[in-house]
Image 1 (tube, helix red, strand yellow):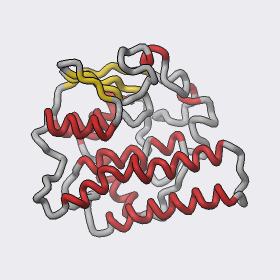
Image 2 (tube, rainbow, N blue to C red):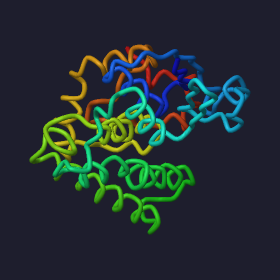
Image 3 (cartoon, rainbow, N blue to C red):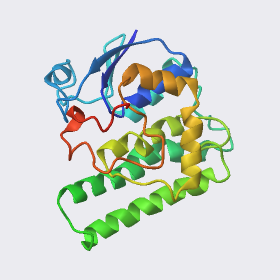
Length: 237
């Protein structure tokens, strides 16, 4: 049995969503943040001293804590390769690019802004201006891709979407508080994602208190600024 150690308001939602899309059975153990970082109960799980989430365990002593690796593992061990394009697919290279884009390019740009803003840098600070410019470029590229595609690698959902949606949604609760209004195709895309039963089920299982951040607007302040999950800015009204 696959066991998923799920931290609230985290990128572990990717793994729950993937399993729901594939119809994979799993056991979920949930942890609440304390109030920003991982609680000691998650750090005390054998093999997970950093308290990372997602963190999964499987039969045979398998332990994994990188979301991309976990997604690959589940797709190929439990999903029969579904949601991953095969090498002979004409969009295979495109799929690989989007599968790695979020953790390799988009999310680092978002974290740069989160830390620069947290440092108190003013709007005229060149580092801040560069960070925001880099994020805008990365969002524009996604928006351009979605202008002619329903999903990132074509007309069908793939693991590239599973990896990317967290960065466009829940990550904005932490930062940056990016307004997606200028990126009309991303906004349309997120509304399509919101209609997927598997996405709805995963979010309700993992974070039933959280309002999925699928709209263009984000909170004015991030969770770092308001004391983490003790705040109600991430909760359903």
